[in-house]
Length: 381
Image (cartoon, rainbow, N blue to C red; front, side):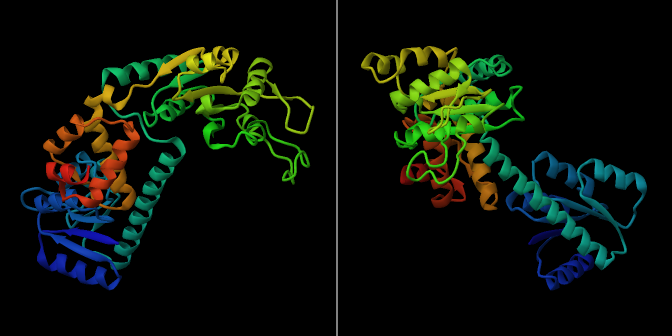
């Protein structure tokens, strides 16, 4: 655990450093608010202990600066001139706690532990939310705003949606956004990658099976449609689904009923289906590899996701977002990209779209300089 102690009195700084290092903390020191802010912006601390009364930038100004810069280190305020009003003001501005001088060692250690425990929980919760809900749709381009506007209109309904677009363009983010903004948001959101499941298993995966219905069916299994009952089922890469499975999906959409493999019993399901594909389904219909009646059932609403090359003005925001996300997940301070480096990324053609850009940003953060430069782009992209 790394702490920052900010106090204009050298004796207090050094005493706190000595005590905290005996408790196995790593401690950095700052003698004024300006230095403290510079250090906190450059490096992440697990907690900051900051005196209020200091010449120049005082502790409350430090607290304001840390909050405005989005620094998530918990701040513990220290003062020898404490009053209720000051303490309340600090807490309102986001301080974790307020400790009066003379300092009580046990209280300091307990407060630091509570602060770091809470910070870790907040960090874990952010990571968990990203895993559960996916990434945000980042960007201010006109193309992306049109998608957001359509999601706002479509999400509150139960209309089926077909999302088209190139690989890596963010089709799954659109699907998740529709679910999250729908009346079904508290119910299950189930994803199925139709291209990743062998054709002989897709029916069992979607509709479930009864025990003994085939050799490896050692127990009853609920399919994805049943698992999504009351919520949303996202069928990704639906253009790769077999014709036999397409016929069964069509029946579920028409009748809102299914039967598991090995059973003739009908099970009613209430599921909103969102599908996505990188294929031209009309061309697949002409070739006989996709059912036209299923296409019309799925495409009540059509949403075409733009490629990254069609929204290059969003690249600076995406680079900042991925840099912050990747550094946060690895517990490292956020790195910057020079304007020249960002311009070079904008000039590049992105056949792999958002997914490719994120991979490139991660590579540059690993291999590049402290500030990612144009030379880093030339060397590693």
